[in-house]
Length: 178
Length: 202
Image (cartoon, rainbow over all chains, first blue to last red; front, side, top):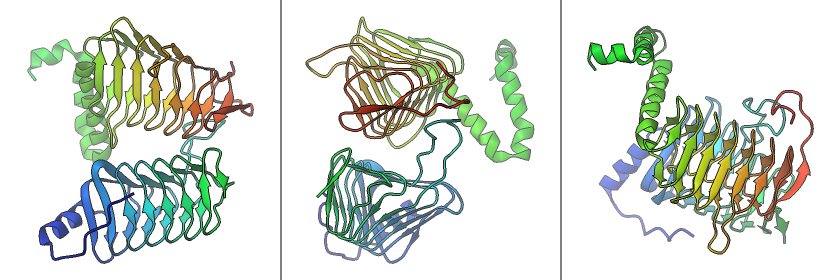
């Protein structure tokens, strides 16, 4: 997972660069950013204190599509490169959660299974608790809920039918919860 | 661009002329149209050795390595995003993409023998369609109106039937019948409920 962030020291250049890269987000406290961050959409993105976005290897996508869509990332969350968070209604990530590389959190499927594929289906919020570990290439689809302290192994695909209770581990696709 | 060059391209000239009032009434739409125009020009450059239909659109720098036969239908779209798409065709291989298919960012298409993609297909981000995996090289056929969702992997030798949906993160290792939903690793198929509008009945 993410390298443990170094202890905070006064780094005005890094602070201004992070402020510039996150100029379309609301940051409470300080956030550390490496590499490229793609921020899209007209919604609100709120980052907590001590968030670490490591986009040095691959860019990180934060996508709040509609004016009322919302991404809330808690304090001390670490996000690895290639991870992407897409919100049409809301995606909430609790404090101290780690999100692995190329993981994806999305609260809408964007195309319906049947019917006109260019009509967006209704969205269901994604809620991730505190101290959760989300592995690389894990996929949290619309309506998935992960409890506090749970683990989502790499490559797992969670849907709204598979909430992960607090402290449990989900792995595989279709997911198995241990 | 000179007047002579514009006279030789009446459609481009009309497009540029229509931009002027639009830029005043709706700047956002005008900017989107400019980007689409630039995408079409970029696709002409990127796919310069390939057979391509009209208005093939590359909104980002697609990595193209076309040493075999690459054929793109009209209005194929490559969307922009974090990671560019990849279109690789080995010498003697064929890579055929039907009209109006759409590719989100990070899609990787590699043909060592044959990859055929139908019309109006939708590919989510980071989908992998490789017709070789080191041991096996077998042609991949993806028929019309297929939706391959985010991060799916299509294994060599697979045929995906018309109108099917491949779930996000699935790994497709066996043929998928028409109008079915394939989900899981390895993917299991179940029939999709019938729909009157889209995709059209086979």
